[in-house]
Image 1 (cartoon, rainbow over the protein chains, first blue to last red):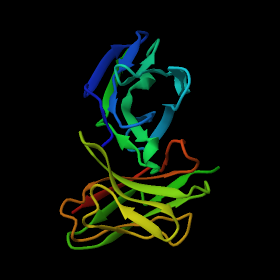
Image 2: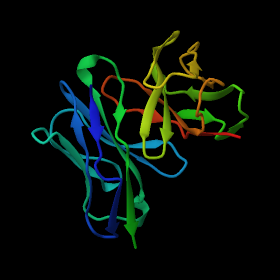
Image 3: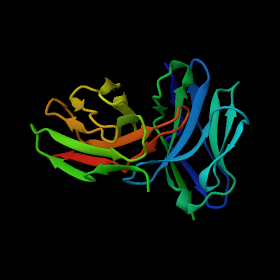
Image 4: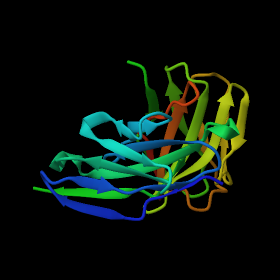
Length: 115
Length: 112
C-alpha cells in the first residue's frame, strides 16, 4: 500500500534562513506527489505537485520540492523563510497505477519561523 | 469563484444525536472525498465518491454515512455509532486525472 512519512513533527527556522521539510514515500508504480499547507482552522491549500519531468518542482509562495527517486524522497524547500510561512505542511502521494484518485497523507510537519 | 463550500464551520452535537455536514462544489469535479483530521494523525479517509450515485468506504467509515445524489453535493452524516466524533472534517474534490485535491475550509465538530 502506498504511504508517505514525514519524520519531523516540527521544524524550527529563523526568518531569512533556508527551510527544508522532509517527506519520503512508498508506492508501487509511478508516484504522484503533492505538498499542501494548512493554516489554523482552515482547509488544505495546494502548494505543488510532481507528476513527471524535472525533479525540481516550483510551486506557490516561493516553495519548491525536489523529487529523488533513488531515495524515494520529495522534500519541500524554500531559500528564505518568512514568519508567514509558519503553518502545518502535509506531503501526500497517489499511486497512478491503481486508477483510483485517492491521496494518502503524511502526519504533517509544523513549521515555525521565528522573527 | 469556483470552490468547495463546507457548512457549518463549527458544529456542536449532543451524544446520541446524528448530525450532517454539508459539502458543495461548483468545480464540476467528478470525485469527492471526506477526511477526518485529528492532531498528530494527519488526514484519514472516511468515504469517497467517484461518480454520482456511487460511493465507497475509506479507511475509517464506521459510524459515518454519505450520499451522492448530485454531482455538486456530498453530505456526510456522523451517526451516534461513531465513538469519538470530535474532530475537524475536511471535504475535497478532484477533477482530471493527475490533478490535486481542492479542499473546503472544514467543519469542526464537537460533541458536548
